Amino acid sequence: MSGLKLAWYGDDFTGASDTLATLAQAGLRAFLFLDVPSAKQLAAVGDLDALGIAGAARAMAPDAMRRALEPLARFLAVSGARVLHYKCCSTFDSAPHVGNIATAIETLHAPLANPFVPILGGQPSLGRHCLFGQLFAVSEAGGPAHRIDRHPTMQHHPVTPMDEADLRRHLRRQGLAPIGLIDWRAYGRPAAELDEMLDGLLATDATIRPILLDVGTEAHLGMIGRLLWERARAAPLLVVGASGVAQALIDHWQLNRRARDGRIAPARGPVFLLAGSMSPVNARQIAATGAYVKVPLDAMRLVQDDPAYVPEIETRIAELLRDGRHVLAHTAASTGTVAEVQSLLASACARLLRRVLERHPVSRVGIAGGDTSSHAVQALAPWGLIWLGQFGPGVALCRLRADDPAFDGLEIMLKGGQMGGTDLYDALIAGTP
Image 1 (cartoon, rainbow, N blue to C red):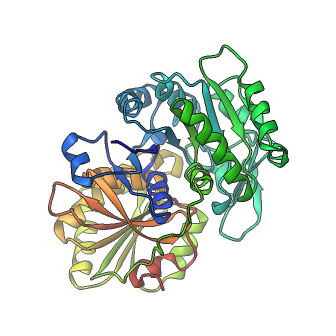
Image 2: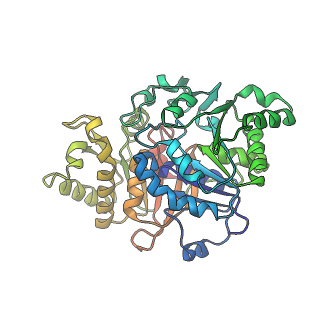
Image 3: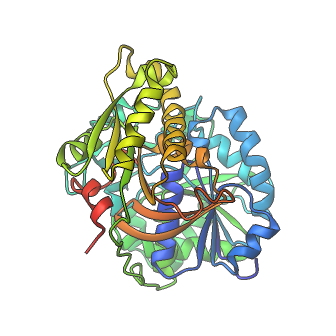
């Protein structure tokens, strides 16, 4: 893997594919694997500038995270990459008991000697801004920014509700301490002064020294990229954050973030869209499209794999696809509460996806929901993804590479529930201009 600059792990599939898109659109040779790649798989994809591995750590308990990340840590440490990126959600939704970011840092850092662990607190391209250590996020593109603990969706997240806006306090709850801060005002200083400030924060005997970096505007990213790359050239560097990490490096390398146009051709045949997200943005996207036959899914009966319900739904969807109709299957109200079924709903949706595609293959699918995307891709068992194009910030179209010929070459859109414009689901069919 000579020449590898960056290796990243995505704690869910939507995040991992967003970083893939960020790098590929800038013209870098990037590929996303679904596990630590074999020598045969590495040979199949050829020379790379950036290598990613998609996982599901965001939905795991700490012990399960350690087991999943330990072999990855060993692989990344010998990969030759200068920057090792733990790609977390841009809203940092995590908790001590699930998706614990401190656990991820401790596990991935174990083989490394560089104590500096920068944490990028924002990604302006997605409306995520970190100022004085406080995280703000928009709830939809172009909308107002909310402090994350007052965000209309994230404060009520069914698994990891965000009730603390100070990312240092949020991560300390998960066991990460002490955490330094470089706030946005430092970026106005000469580079030498910024370096001295960082050296002062790193003047400790701690094995791991996490430092939160404010990211308020796009202009901050190039300066942050310089800090990351110069420290990484001295010793491999573990960095935590959303795809703003890749953007910071791209800006420092003076690459064009849009070197490739990212246009997407219309779908070839019927599209199957599975929406497991219950976010307001996803609800508006569903309401806005008239291009699909909409099939509501009873979340509780789906989770229970109800034999009087699930086969009938699978048959109905497969027959509609066979008739050339586009189908949007989406979760709806059930007899149970969201909290009762949320942890199992993503895997139930994944089973539904695979069974439908086994009955009637299609060339393009869409998955809405971070956890749903992670489980859905695992159900199809590919070994890698290639970026094809971009519907918008945080929403990419990829092609699966799989040993199973039934799924090899499948085009797939993965998106978090809050990502994408109102007309996204129509674009999944029609492509982009």
